[in-house]
Amino acid sequence: YLLGKSDKYDARDVERLQQDDKWVENYLIWRHDVVDDTLKMIDESFQWRKDYTVNDLTESVLPKWLFENGSLFLHGYDKEGYKLFWFRVKHHTRDPKQQLEKKKLVAFWLEHYAKRDHGKPLTVVFDMSETGISHIDLDFVRFIVSCFTDYYPNFLTKIVIFEMPWIMNAAFKIVKGWLGPDAISMLKFTNKNDVQEYISGEYLPPHMGGTDSFKYSYPPLVDDDFQTPLCENGPITSEDEHESKDEIDADTKETGELNEEQNLNQKKMNSIEQISKSEETDKTEIKPKNAKKALTTFKGPLLHISPAEELYFGSRETGEKKCLIVLTNVTKNIVAFKVRTTAPEKYRVKPSNSSCEPGTSLDIIVSLHGGFAASLQDRFLIMAAEMDQSSGAGVPELTQFWKEVPRTKVMEHRLRCHVVESSKPSSLTLKENTFNIPAKNNEDLHIQLTRLLQINKRLQEQIERCLWFQQLSVVISLFSVTVVAFCFYLAYTQRS
View 1 (cartoon, one colour):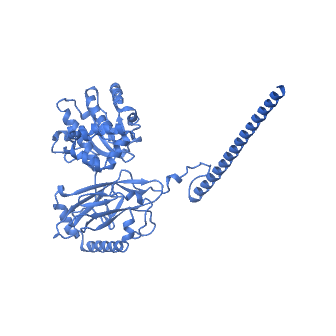
View 2: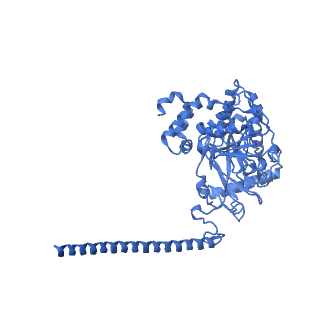
View 3: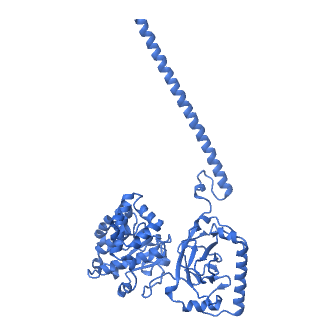
């Protein structure tokens, strides 16, 4: 089906399709596992990607004024941790001559985010405050909708429409027809009173009832505000500040102790993918309950990073405060790295700025600080770059290296946080009051399971009794039919 049209596709997309199982899975999910529909969507989306040169869209290709306009950008997260794709409708003007370039801007942002965050879905926000009939551009809106329904599979969580003017009601009835029955449920019409059901105030501008002081500007491209996290010795105020000799010696000593401990426990640490709740000191490392989640590995050109996408923390109640990131240097040179986060006040990262020898692995411990709890909106950024063999790997050398290394030579990889609400398997978790017994601890859970087994046993006994009575009834019925038939036979023979 696809091979016959291979000349209509970008070879890079075909190669990715053959290698990226997640991408294929998303197509299947979006088309409800119907193979013919899935193939049709892949065919249409691949042709579209080639027509719009999606793989080659960069900042330098698109006009600068498109980015400066501020009508489309990525910023913030909704309450479920999904990135927000903003369409500030009041900044959009209809112009047929610019329509293709604006559509390519949409494709640029979607592709930019899809590759950067491994296909994590988006929440689209149509901010329609201060808009009117002059801002209606159904062709452009239809293109945005088509991107999610036809070209980027399983990439949309919801569409939040803020303060839609009544005059646009008729227009959005048309939009609903484009979305289809599955996507219509994703439409959320909101105003100041209820928009925070989907997006917390920290990511909403003041005119939407929030407290976000973010002001769009370009350049550079809008990105998360990654900062240096807390280290084991306290907060790092600036990477450019020179540390005192005592601080450097202390940090070197701690790093040496950590490496020595890791070497002694190498087999144990290689099997650890997450670190669960610990009531002991930071040197005690425990195998996590969610180890399976970290078996995936991101294979970058400089480092292999495990886990590939998410760090699993416990909620405030479950108390799992630590995670492990494993870096493996796959080059022949020393690789310098540093870790940044969008919530530097929450996390300690050790080491947060160091280097990895060729062909070796290094463990980074990420732990929550104080009474903080992890959030779905929290993100981590791992930056890595190759160093010359002649370069030193001490603190002063690393500081100077990061000042001089070109941005084009820096590998970046992002990790998001996942909050595990319960460490117990969901299949064994019972809701409270299922049997009028509060599920608060292991003993209560055991009682509930025992009660469940007892009820199941009684039901099984009742079913067995019912089956016995049913069988008895069948036997009696057959016996009765036989007796009646025999009586008729006797009566017939006597008459004859």
